[in-house]
Amino acid sequence: MLKILGAIMVIGASSGIGYYCSKKLKLHLEALLHMKKMIMLLKGEILYMNSTLEEAFAAVALRISDPMYSDFLLDLSEKLKERSSRLFYDIWCEGVEVHLSKSDLWKKDRLDIKALGENLGYLDKQMQEKNLDLYLEQLEEEMAQGKEEFLSKSKLYRSLGIMGGIFIAIVLM
Amino acid sequence: MNLRDELLKIFSGSIRGILGQTQIDFNQVQEIRLRIHAPMLIIYKNEEYYVSKNGKLTRYLEEGYEISKQELRETMEYISNYSLYAFEEEMKQGFITIQGGHRIGLAGKTILDSSDIKSMKYIAFINIRLSHQIKGCATPVLPFLYEQGKMLHTLLISPPRCGKTTLLRDIIRQISNGTNQRTGKTVGVVDERSELAACYMGIPQNDLGIRTDVLDCCPKAKGMMMMIRTMSPEVIAVDEIGSREDLEAIEYVINCGCKLLATVHGHSIEDIKTKPVLRELLNAHVFERYILLNNIEKIGNISAIYDSMGNPLLQPKSRWKHA
Image 1: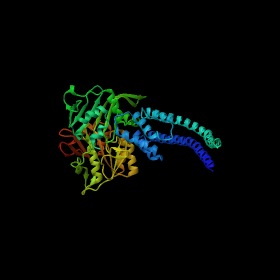
Image 2 (image 1 turned 30 degrees about the vertical axis):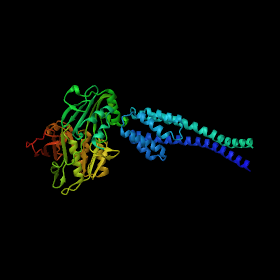
Image 3 (image 1 turned 120 degrees about the vertical axis):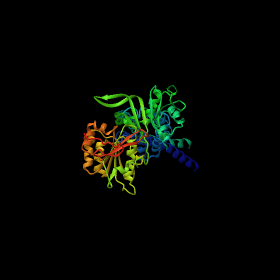
Image 4 (image 1 turned 45 degrees about the vertical axis):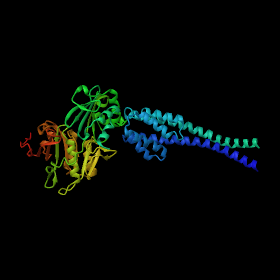
């Protein structure tokens, strides 16, 4: 009886790990989608509303449902308002580290976001558009890859979890 | 946030430190001028001073703090709030208006697109002109702007730095709010340079009265017509008229039965008559009151008030003649 209970627990835990890995891929995709939505709203604020970065961040923060991303933007907006004698890029990178390191974005994604901050606010509106479009293109590629990865690996992770659990249970029994 | 803190934020760290040490009343500061490799200058209580590196105002050139290229570049970052792109249109005219309605004049190398100014680079000269709201400064002139309880078309004439925008701002506020003797009127303000209302995110930072609607950053001529069509104002107020388009819009305003309140750069009525567009307005007796300002005794000193025929209602007594 005890053996059966142990085997069920092993299979359950192993399946859980499989589901967790699969879920992580899905959450990553969702995080990329959040980023895309945020950048598109920012683009609209900058190009069509002619907002400064401080205004644009504050306005977009109100339109985003996920508190992690809206806090990121609100914090940036507040810091820009302070004009604390620092470069924009430094303020941006700090914001990414403080707010987005807990998100489901990967390290590479965060590096791409930081790179976007290098040229935000630089030169004219055309430059802003090109800079944001370049990042959106990168994001699209990431999302396409992410989708592919999710389709191919999520099933694999779940099956491996269950099968691995059964295998360990048999070996242990 | 007070004027001092609001203003210090736009300077680079080092300049901020210097100006932060000064013991001056920022409400009395008219201008701060920054030029690369030149001493920082401040116009304080109508007098020009150098600012030393420990924040003291001095008359000695050698004590003046010299502005570096890096400091000016950093100051530009803060003036534009890291978003120079958002001021493209204003840059073409050579100035940016920041929060609080302060006007930042810029000079550097212009970038041309065929014959039009596209933008500006290598900005090496900055002139910060502080905006002040002086509530009550319009009280002495207000009785002259009404006749039998009706508001009159009024033109404020003054050279730069004599307080015409400040006076206009308070006239708007008082007309809009009204008094026990005068009922408040709906005022439409076309604030092309964001100096009158100093809107920040659409909300006026200066008090323009309870019956005032503001069209911010809108070209005057288009804005005047828009205001009449949309907000049905009794009075339209604009700053610094003078173009041919303005003339057409003014005619439209007057034909609609609105009263006009405007300002123009000039030293005297004779000076105004040398400007083609304004000469037409003068000859057509469009304005019923002319208020002349100077800064002889103090900024905003009212030197004369005339009626539409050029008769003085306030000193000097001499009547100016129509062409």
